[in-house]
Image 1: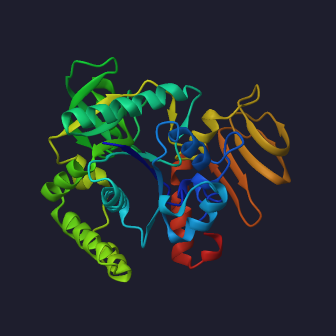
Image 2 (image 1 turned 135 degrees about the vertical axis):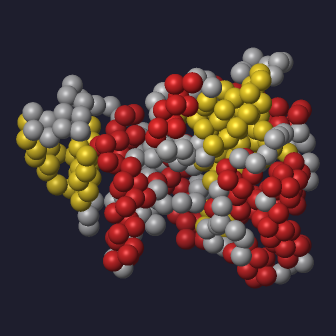
Image 3 (image 1 turned 45 degrees about the horizontal axis):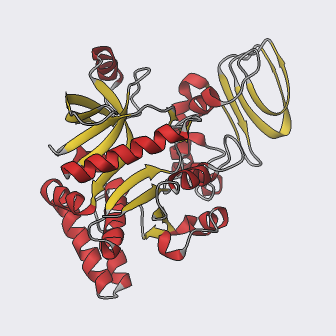
Length: 355
């Protein structure tokens, strides 16, 4: 019963536009330190096992090869098209099961940022894998929310389970991205954790749960598996492209009664916006982070990235200013989650050169 780690490295990170683009998505950027988020994640999880895979789409394969030259061809799991995390994780499980039908699978995201306690992170992943194996369950990792957010799924914890140093509970309810008022009520109750999207399960247990709760997805994955076994690659790609586009949260986790949660004991950041990134970067005495030349007068709590041009500001507070070769973003930090709306508008306008 070997363990296999899957690194999800698909999307484009639209909330970090204009630095994050289709050809240079968030996980390939060096946002903190000297390594990209993907490089840091890969090196981290490789301490657990040599069985590490990267799930991505064709357009990103060459860029990932450059960043991870040690990654063998067999360690790439390439989506023919974006179909959501349920399909991506299903494809990863199919690939792993072809090589090891009794495998335990762990799934992490390429674009998460951790603090310096890497050992606590790896210990948590080991704990969830052990519970997945011993209880034949789906297992996720939850973090006590420091504030109410609509960007994450919430886990209502049920009864605790004995036998481990880490806090492990049965999941009473799984709610994907509630509205702000509901999120505030969840945080106030003390009964909910953020879902960090760090999963573990025996691959055959995942297939059984999909067959029960997402039968269309399971049937489609069976077509993919059978076509691959017969060597019909184009047919397998077509079957995958026809899969429903859903997050694993909606397709399975909200519906299953076989879900456990392990409490996180490490620092974690999603880096889902410029404001999130600003929080982890070293700031000056006025709370500003500046990358590039600047003259700031009576300005505080700003996130400024301008490696090519001098930025001069007077009386600027709580703002984001991001400059690239072909675009400049200016927005309040409080609205940084809405940067994705600019990407949506650019798509509507047909200005694909900025995407």
